[in-house]
Image 1 (cartoon, rainbow, N blue to C red):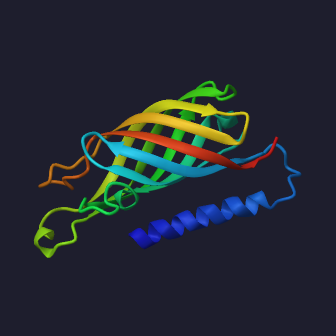
Image 2 (cartoon, one colour; image 1 turned 30 degrees about the horizontal axis):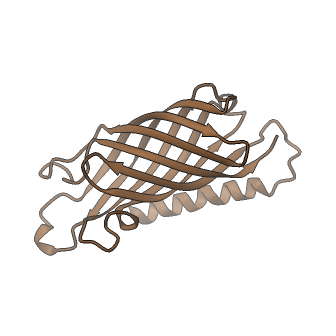
Length: 187
């Protein structure tokens, strides 16, 4: 499952890179691609860090809808140098940005993906450690004059764990901050 998701992300990234190398004669397409870091905190649990990509175009609801892929992990957060549980989140998302032509843009986002926790000991093999992810979040995005964008949001996992019926470290409430650098933007 992980390999398929990683290959899908690599394929999508390759398509974006090939589009970036086009001669730009089709100005109506004018894609915008941003990449950066994501910092995520589950309510009363771990810090998770990773990377995120955001894509939009005038052909997609006049830049109101943004498509994204993200990977966040406690391996780069709370589990780094500690005995915290190592967990990985692989996400694809679709967001609607209100006031998309302004610098400050409220947004609502739907996320889907896969969660995996590595308990590292065979005695925990009876506990569930994987789950599908389905979450909603909302927040604010600010686009600076420089090629930087910051997103702040709060969200809720509609599928969360109780320890017996799902991973016990998949908490429902989370907070995120993403800092993007604009990789590709055509006017």
